[in-house]
Image (cartoon, rainbow, N blue to C red):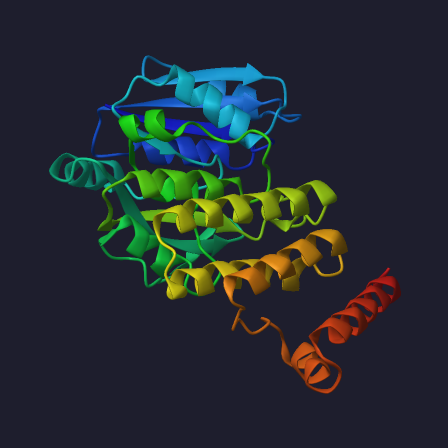
Length: 319
């Protein structure tokens, strides 16, 4: 059986559609475990409407998505586990296709393709094609996923054999932002390989605004992101210390430096020291035309400061 573990927090606008995408699966040998993480809206009551033999719904005090996933996993009975967010959707053949591949490839994690859609409109859906959309051994898959320093390890993409999770442990509940990278790096390195299912699609809901966890710039979020990246790098270097892997690890840290330079200088300094120890980074700062122009004349650090001041000035003028 497949156990779908779904944490939910203030997802009243989206959770019905997410549940329905599980109900629509061609593979019917599944259970869905929904853990409402102390929502302040009607998420729990909406989920309760679907409670049945196959769908369990539990409400717990708010402790974060990682804790909610761990509770759901502790209740799961399936041989295969999928962690799915309460605002995403699965294509109807996903569980069937991934299950068949999981049976054919024991000790493997099964991945899927994914894309974004906006404003609740599936007509805006577009696949986000990645180089790692192929079958590779675990180290090669992570190398491919980390190539551009922006790995996408959205939980709903993967189907995981239960025994792999039992070997590496559950979600780190001290993490909030980017907790999926740390968890799936552990999981994937424990697997023989990652097998890609091109007939399985995750519809990733985007454009949720500043309230989305991925958009937070709080100190807690920055600390969590740094911890997740650092841990993932350590796991990877324990398996492969090649020059190429060291460069990929340095580039992950360099992107953190670019994103967090004005948010947490102490962590940025730590990251820069690690980058130097790894041999340096060749990652260019992702930027728009204005920031590129400023960087050319003033250097990226000073350009970020100028750009940030200009943004704040624009925000004030709008308000």
